Length: 134
Image (tube, rainbow, N blue to C red; front, side, top):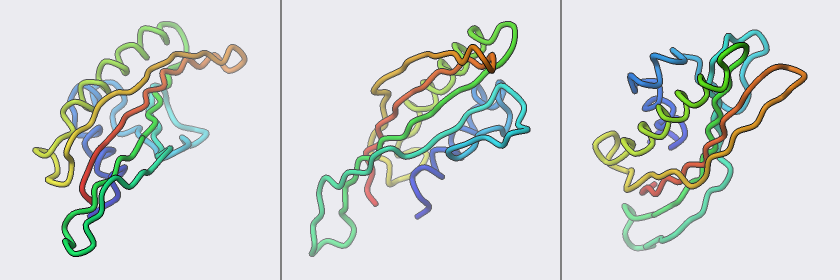
């Protein structure tokens, strides 16, 4: 199985609400310097093993926390990140066993906004929890 973050990224990119805002500008960890805005980055920030049955090779429950950041720049940046936030949240709750049989549940844990005044970049940061069978 591909890493859960890669499956999540593919799901984000395939979600119409997300792709209508950022297209394919969804990057692991850090966006390229010359990337156009708006865009999304994502990274795993924790990986916890919940349950392992040594004699059952098909059961290894893990919970991964993925941080998803939406960035926008210029006039209307705040409105843009709010649209990105809503699109990402919709995609999170659609990331389930219908997308990949390993996924048990996904949910939003926390959301916050910030702004880099020097660069004129506005950001929404969303922490996502994914429970899955590795």
